[in-house]
Length: 79
Image 1 (cartoon, helix red, strand yellow):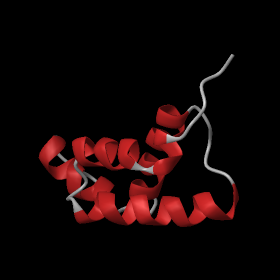
Image 2: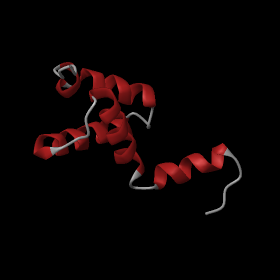
Image 3: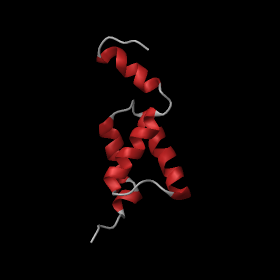
Image 4: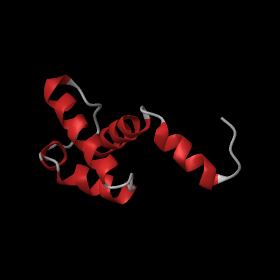
C-alpha cells in the first residue's frame, strides 16, 4: 500500500496482524535474555500481546507489562 509520511504509515503497521505479536516477542526476548519457548510462554505471549493491543500499542506500557511478568522478575542472570 502507498502512504505519505508517518501518520499514514502507522495505521498500516497496526493493521498487520503480525505486528503486535512480533513486537511483543522481540521486547520479551530482549528483556529476559531468551526467546519465548514452550507452552507456558505461548500463553504468556498471548496475554502480553493482548495487553499491548489493549493499551493502544504504547511501548511504555508493553515494557512495563513485561517487567512485571514473572518471567522477567524471576529470571536468572548469566554467569
